[in-house]
Amino acid sequence: MNEGDEKRIENRLRYHWPIWFAEDFNETLSQGQLVDISSSGAAFTYQDEGNCPYLGQEVTARFSVPRFNAEDSFDMASYTRAVRVCRVDQINSFIRRIAVQFIEPLPFRPGEQSDSEADTRKRLKSVTI
Image (cartoon, rainbow, N blue to C red; front, side, top):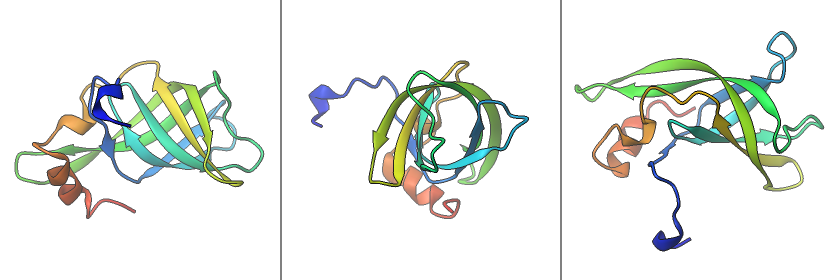
């Protein structure tokens, strides 16, 4: 995609961290792997076991996001959000990439906490699992 096609109004934070989700949080939770996140939504991969979220579905998601401090350190801030599935891409026969929009946005812009994407990658190197 060239820069002229970019429609996002906010930089996304790219990192890999677990995300838990379910239609009913009292039932069994499914786990995905975050790919990127902004204040208004996120994308994650999910190994489809026959219960993949579908376009338009509303689920509840629980995840953590690094909040960077001035001293080059960070804390993980945990959130639970109602989300709406806005895209499901098939990566291969087992893996789906799910894009969701938060019903209530995060109180900060995760991808705009540092001066550059290179700085962010350097800071996140120790947090990625």
